[in-house]
Amino acid sequence: MREKINEILERTLEELKSANDSQSLDAVRVRVLGKKGELTGILRGMGQVAADMRPKIGQWVNEAREKLEEAIGEAQKKIAERELEKRLENEKVDVTMPVEGRSAGSLHPMSIVLEQLLDIFTGMGFEAVEGPEVELDHYNFELMNIPKNHPARDAQDTFYIDDNVVLRTHTSPVQARIMTTRKPPIRIVSFGRVYRADEADATHSPVFHQLEGLVIDEDISMGDLKGTLDTFARRLYGEGVTTRFRPSFFPFTEPSAEVDLTCAACRGKGCRICKDTGWIEVLGSGMVNPKVLEMCGIDSRKYSGFAFGMGVERLSNLKYNVPDMRYLYENDVRFLRQFRG
Ligand code: DAH
Image 1 (cartoon, rainbow, N blue to C red):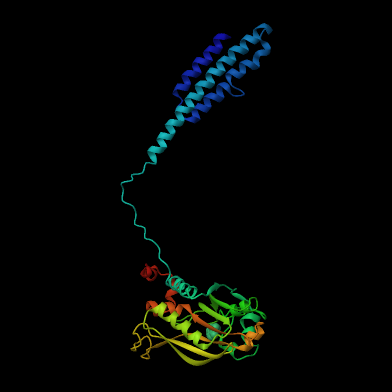
Image 2 (image 1 turned 90 degrees about the vertical axis):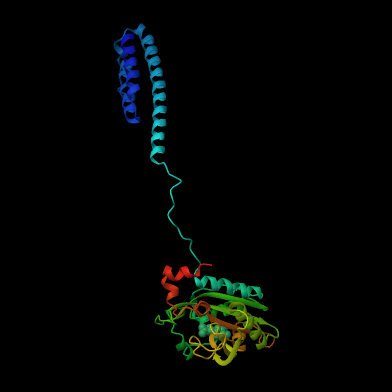
């Protein structure tokens, strides 16, 4: 029996030497040490062995098993090392190879202008706030003094969700949300998407962006509005650009004004962009209608305010001389690349 065990041991040790991957190593292990393996078989056959021999044989088998397990462990280590080496060899990277060119991204022109607008207005003490794009009719129209059946509703081709809910047609409802929840003094700007059922063309898009401003305090006058917008115009387009106020009408302001800026392309001399007028219309504004103040719970005898709203695509396109609004949304990299700072 001793010889048989030794023979198994020697033979297996020999086999282990030539096992050079983990699969063949495992096969050898199972064949000898597995449940139905050769050494295990000897222990199982113990029933037929004389009782006094059993402890001895058990001991030999265990010694042989220990030696084999050690040898298998060694072999495993070697194989793992070799496999790692092979993998590293295959994955070798030549760090001296030239890399593929990868160009950095750039900010969208609207993002650049938005950042500037926020800088300009927060620099004047305005706080930036946001409002929902899916808006209640109540805020979008009613509190802005545009009741149902008011003709001004026709001018803003509205996407209705249901009778009481719309996609906001302007950022003015943010005014109402702020006035109904805060006490003066109020000085906010609000930027965001607005929606109108318009066909997309060079100057229209069913989705575009507005920036709204609102100031409410004691003794606020049209002069404050003019000063604020003059500063805004100069900071965005440079020295020499000023504002021109033209009387207009909005239900939520009284009096109302449309505001033109000196054409930044020709500095007021007259060119193709401003149709030789030297002026470009960019925003609506006015003194907040006392009726709106009262509906929003603000005492119109004590407080007054001004408001303005502007289309940001237009401001951006004027700044960069972009002739068509659709360029802003098509994400053509040949267009976008030009705004790399
Ligand atoms: N909400 C107006 C529009 O979308 C723009 C506007 C005009 C906003 C006058 C104002 C304002 O705050 O005072 O056409």
